[in-house]
Image (cartoon, rainbow, N blue to C red; front, side, top):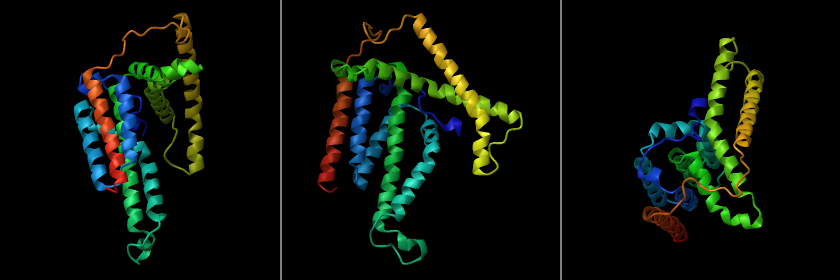
Length: 268
């Protein structure tokens, strides 16, 4: 299960999606989410699937990585589908056992919610897969730079998000090593009641927290030794500049979002 968590991983490449400005990708994913939450029909979901599939093909990110990242949220997706399936009002499909509690509207809502969650996760994961944490930090800080006028700690927030994304794979690898070491000593994490399984996690959590705090202390020391003092007076190694292709991609996603809103208002 731990190996299925792929959030924060970066797949280096030289594709068009990799070369896009990080600000373009962040704004594009926001527009994609707006379009996704305005999709209400087979037509609109079909359009978004084509867009997402095209982005995946262009990025050349392994499809296995995207599907593997969905495994940890299977329970959430299934729970959401069941809730919408049985608790959405409407005329029952048939007067037979469980079907009497399921309406056509509930079935459509459950399917649409499942598609929405899956496509949302795959779309946002695609941004982290094709953008390095440093680039994400630079792009986010640049987009939020107007908030500096109201003394909002933009650089600090962007730095914290970057460090968090960077250390997710590291902590997952550390957890896997600790679990392997505990299993070698006879620990059992897969059998027993729920309380017994929870108690079995204590030998994992304690060394994991110690390791995380030790890494945080080492990182803080390294930053202090390099005279890091926040965003004041700092310059970027790579200056972000929009290119024609970035403007074209942003324009395309803006048209997509506007089109989804228009189709929803038109009832399509």
